[in-house]
Image 1: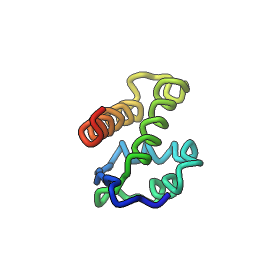
Image 2: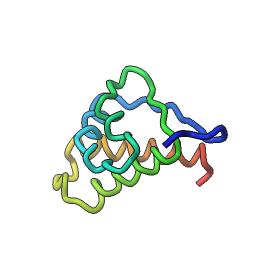
Image 3: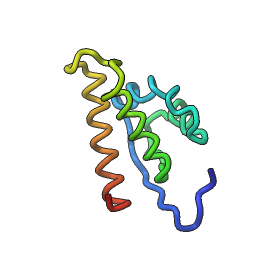
Image 4: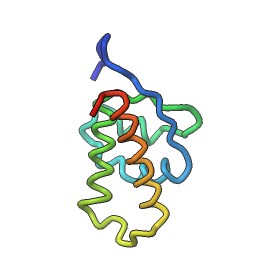
Length: 100
């Protein structure tokens, strides 16, 4: 999907445990216009540019992983905590940029 003139791009830095945990679930982003490949190749050294549809996809994937799948049966696992932090951070960015 090609962004238009009025599409807002947000630069988000995802590093460390958040990035490693997210990269384990890129297979859930199969229909996301290349977002899965971008996340797989992302190293976390610079912010990644995400548009509204990218954030929608990431938030949906995180919701599926954290709420609907028993991917992390231990609620205190570090991977689950990292994904919860990432989801709250991305949701805050989304709300600030798009007013939800």
